[in-house]
Length: 255
Image (tube, rainbow, N blue to C red; front, side, top):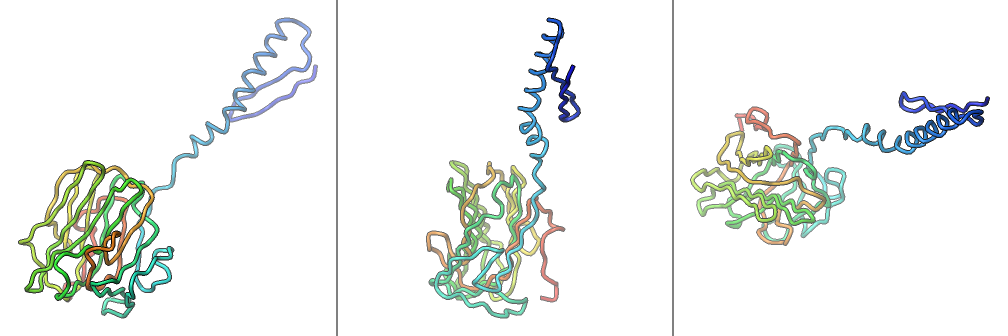
């Protein structure tokens, strides 16, 4: 009697090419069915076993040239200047028509995240400025903005929008000096949004914000070319977790 054997995922299937008795024939048919099912389902089971995607990693965009930002070729609006701004190379925007549009959303697929940006707003910029804007194909949005006072101070304004759910955060009493470098952070833990300036929490609130899909990110302006930013941006950090105050970026106290 000839026997062909197939091994798969710890299961052994035997098919018999010759069976002299009806019982053996039925057993052979049953083995064929089992073996066929096992072989047919093996790609599905292996795919499920291998479907554990590697954990998301932080992404850092350093704005030191217009050719590549985070490995992506940006669309350049106007003529941003790339200069040594004291903390390293940075992109500087004129507040009128300078901006960068990157064809990527680093936080796409993340249920929680932290976005940090190292920036220096000018004192003579427009009152309302949007300098980080992420928007996906479903029109979900993340915005980091500032409001500048006539006295040359600014307050942080952040915003999340997904469908009918939205949350703006802004406290006009929490003012900071323009003309110096600051870290702004927007943190979302899957339920609650908060924003920070130089590691200090200023506001928070609850909002439903499902993971974003593919889309674009603009720097120095909103994606619809409104509310231009006047000042410089050095770095933008994207983390796949809701960072706490001690984990956020800070400038040396001497600054």
